[in-house]
Image (cartoon, rainbow, N blue to C red; front, side, top):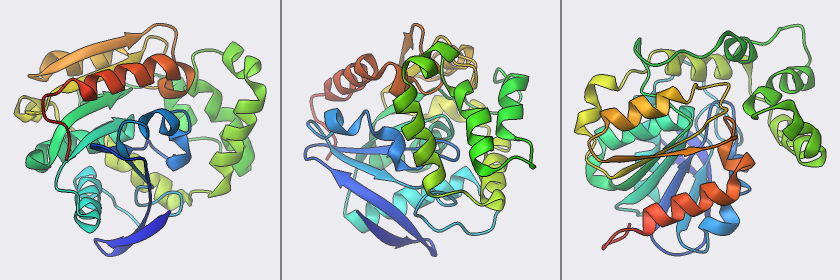
Amino acid sequence: MATAHINGINLYYEIHGEGPNLALIEGLGYDSWMWYRQLPEFSQHFRTLVYDNRGVGLSDRPPGPYSHGENAADLAGLLDYLGWERTHGLGLSMGGFIAQEFALTYRDRLDRLVLVATAFGGPNMVPLPPEAVRALTPDPTLSPTGKIRSAMPLAFSNPAWVQDHADEFEQIVAWRLQHPQPPAAALAQAMAGLTFNAEARLSEIEAPTLVIAGTEDHVVPPANAQLLAAALPHARLEMIPGAGHVVQIEAAERFNQAVIAFLKDVTTGGR
């Protein structure tokens, strides 16, 4: 657990395990806690980097605007700091935007790519449903706890999951509240997503890519995964039945197995 001074800000990061390099890129408003069901497995196979994007968690939260080109440059700078020449990359939701930008801008530093619960952005992606937009722009009169409790259930496939995993859900709420994100930083992250559009450039991504989505994603419609996989030149698609937006939590066993198998299906792994 440490910080690195990158592109004028301090980025919080952790490294777990040994093996080929793997960078995990978190979603909008999430800290590195979000990989709690991945790190025990991934760290057995990979030297796994988790870090907090600018604007969230224990990283600096400068005023916006942000861009995903800037976020990709932050990751590249962090790799420089760590002495990592190349890495596998996995991005979820907003992290998938950053991962796509990294794959396009720093293609000689990427081995394999995993895009989870995400889209290519722009006018031709399947838009977020109204309830997701409302969750991302909660009632400003709500307390921080009220905002999290009103929005977080939408990330899961259905209310039954939250009810059946009540203790785990309470832990997730506590993690979300541990390092409250300033409204300006939350807006800056959200606006970076609204201006992101990689559709016309996807054919330039050379890395073998695994696209994963839950069939019950109520935040980023799963049809976006099909569009992504069809537009990428070297992609395979994994749809996980019954899982929601946080597919890495709800379907962790299948998710982890799919990612590990894909990343290890190489003759020369990440360095």
